[in-house]
Image (cartoon, rainbow, N blue to C red):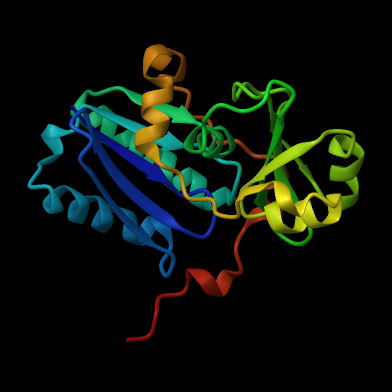
Length: 225
């Protein structure tokens, strides 16, 4: 069993291969648009484990929220490859995936706020309980709005927005991680018993008008060699 996992949530394109034997292989690139680099990264990841496309038995895609164009690239690539290989494709939000990456036993009254830095002063946010079950739908908000929504809770913080959020909430000691890195092996283990719930769930998760999340046009220019 080999699963190909794709993440193009924000400025980074990452490719992961996980297996039932816990062998993993990961590659990341933040210098080129996912549309340019993803096929290369997938090829390199497969070669790194001595695999062919036909060895892949399933694909997991992080569906956002994040950059409008990058999300479409990751989802389109994964969906197209799944159809070409006649294998299942599964989608999971990046916020839930980050939550499951750091899943462990928490106190019963604990609430966990996943915050991914968005454009400008905004954050992509979602609140989870101690069993990693979502308490609200994902939202996009600045610090002021985040305080209105979540200040009443004693929180643990995860994600690239954690430092700013926790500092403004006066709960700096409650930061679990300030990274957005998804451990797809942990994600797969968490969702495996209910994997069918995620099959074909590959719609991009947008929390704003597409133009608000597009990158600077210069980012799409090829590097001068």
